[in-house]
Length: 180
Ligand SMILES: Cc1cc2nc3c(=O)[nH]c(=O)nc-3n(C[C@H](O)[C@H](O)[C@H](O)COP(=O)(O)O)c2cc1C
Image 1 (spheres, rainbow, N blue to C red):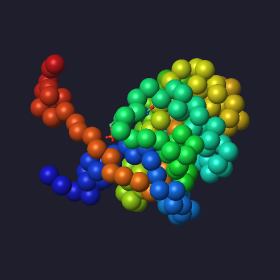
Image 2: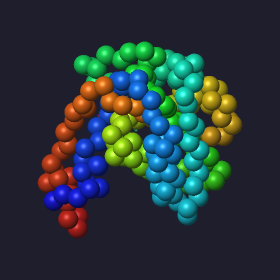
Image 3: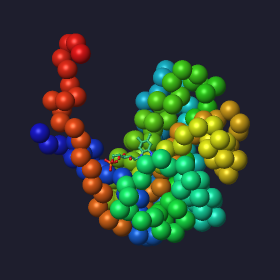
Image 4: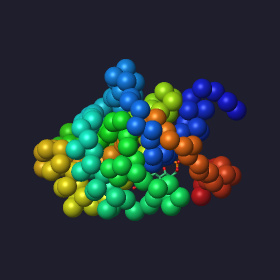
């Protein structure tokens, strides 16, 4: 079982440290394009993708992520501003007014599309989870997002400084046919 898409999906790993090399505008626009084409409830497209290149803003986001990220693979020492020195950061936020029902899922789908595109381009990313209203409020404040917006993810992107590793449960443990 092998094809290009499956190889990209299977090959993507979270990477928490980057080389500091730049991400080109062409690469960035492909990543954003992948986000744009994510599915959403009734095609509501409730998302906004905030591209952050400013070191000052990355530092602020990094300080927040360091404080709240609940899970970090221990052996990876973070460097720089707490996000691991990414060339660019994309913050995915959604407007619940555009889709009161499924805005979170839509933002998650867009985040994953962008993570996969980054990997397909030889870049890496990790999904920094934003959990809880105080954290979301802080991201909104840092980025000047309107009050009603929900923050779904912070996605630092850059050339990977190492190879990420993770495994998955076997399909036989996950799949049931017809009933549980
Ligand atoms: C909703 C969500 C939140 C996550 N939050 C964090 C996080 O705060 N810190 C972190 O290091 N990784 C975070 N991750 C990345 C996961 O830890 C990672 O995807 C998982 O361990 C599998 O590893 P892999 O992505 O390398 O395959 C998050 C992933 C998701 C989907």
